[in-house]
Amino acid sequence: MREKSRDKERLQHIIEAIERILNYTKGCDYDMFVSNSMMFYAVLMNISIIGEAANMLTEDFRNSHPDTPWKLVRGMRNYLVHDYCNVDDIVVWDVVTNDLPILKNQIEQYLQEFSEEF
Figure 1: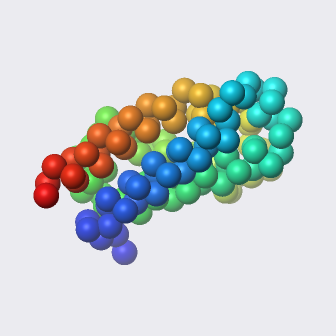
Figure 2: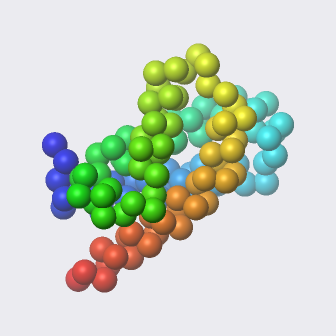
Figure 3: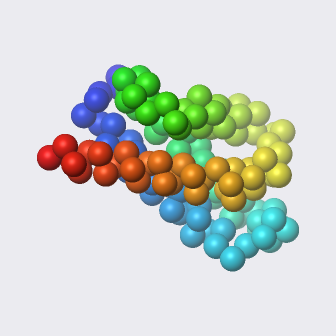
């Protein structure tokens, strides 16, 4: 069950997972990323956490924040989990290098909104 009161907690889970990924991959290039299986699979796990946390946000929250492509965020999790044997490492690297910094900024803004409510 999705509870509006838990949206802030889910957003915090997303931020924590993004920060772990960015920490794991700091200073890495694509070749380093794909050659380190532990890093690669740690990143996949955290992207899955991001997608699951996004899925657990209330529909009202997602609808009120349409700048974030929630369907794609959740879809990436489904891709990693259900099509695990066909994961394209180039797609994952693109998410890490291009999409996650944007998502991080958005989620930080959303968390700020919660802070401003009180």
